[in-house]
Length: 146
Image (cartoon, rainbow, N blue to C red; front, side, top):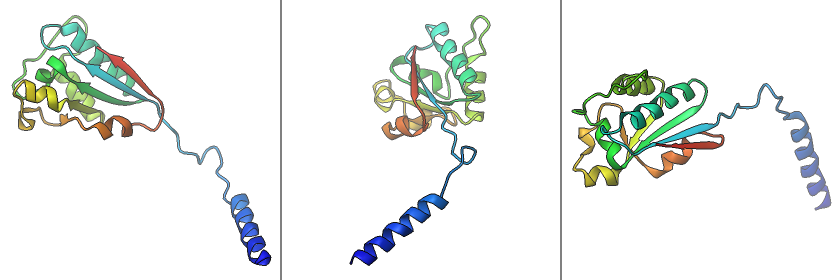
């Protein structure tokens, strides 16, 4: 029995010594930015500022955008565009973010409260699922609330 245990330990030690991961082989972990938008068309600064932050952050971070309360109206197919100051207009920013692979999610409870169905959402916008909040990045999560 001792021989079997020693053989197994020796095999494990040899495997551990030969299975060395060098720093350039290690998977790079990217931090994530969770951007929470609650405002609607009545406050363009609080809509366009977080979208601008998302565009900047998505260049080298994982980004997820979550819209709830009045913000669910922003991502419906018939939503009016928003332009304000020097910011990228809302619909252009949303499309750029989708093209960059950013997940944009609408709160299902808020959608229901406002009578918005999933088929009413713009193409590419998804109904939020809690598991997605934790799986969009492998690093730390920074939250920005607007």
